[in-house]
Length: 328
Ligand SMILES: [Mn+2]
Image (tube, rainbow, N blue to C red; front, side, top):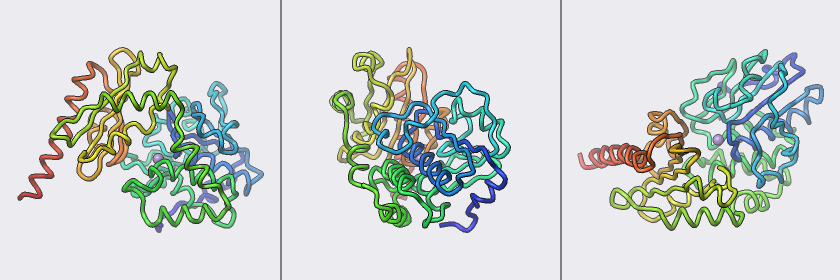
């Protein structure tokens, strides 16, 4: 895949206590990458003590073996020989697990976010990779990948590619998925139960977001939102809104979608997606967030209409620039 590939066994030389974490509000890729690497290390290096830290794992991912052993309590002051930061564009995205990163003897970062500066002692940052799970898989000895690791890594790839649909899906992604399928995993179940199945509450929120969505910029941008009081009404959390921004962009003729949900008084979490033109990561970065070219996010404060105005204005500039270039 690349010729400067990191050597995991060199990074783990002499280590006995290893920990790892994915980003805040973990998604399928963060969870899949951690569990995949965790199962691999436990199976092949039994002398290692491996701990995985993460914020609460959404229920759809509980079918993965070991999901119930992920530590969500960060109160103990442990120190580790090696700490892996997976799918985290910067160290602050580790959340409360950052203290274990800071105190570790050696740090390793494996990630595919274009904004990642390479903040660990050893870094494997491949912005063209579909997912961190795909990169992790490339670092492992294929013969020695246990089925539980294959399931986790496959799930991570499935989620970050929208089931092999987004433009980040490369031939290498499909080859990696094929290798993992040959480990005898139930790929259908992983796709259906963790990606497509929605709870009643999730479908209610999706329905609300779709019905109140508005088209802007002559239908090139679609925007919608969910209020904090609706989340309270349904007892819903951030993971219940996964997929809404992608579904919005499934609207014919759109170039980009914006979805906001209220996280506090006049505080919103923003997700953006684009098809071909808009660079979401640039917009997210100006607003203190980050992500990928086709998928990025940030948090904003103030009135929802001001936030939407500002983001859509950035998108309009990019779309006009691109149109200017094609007409020139
Ligand atoms: Mn990812």
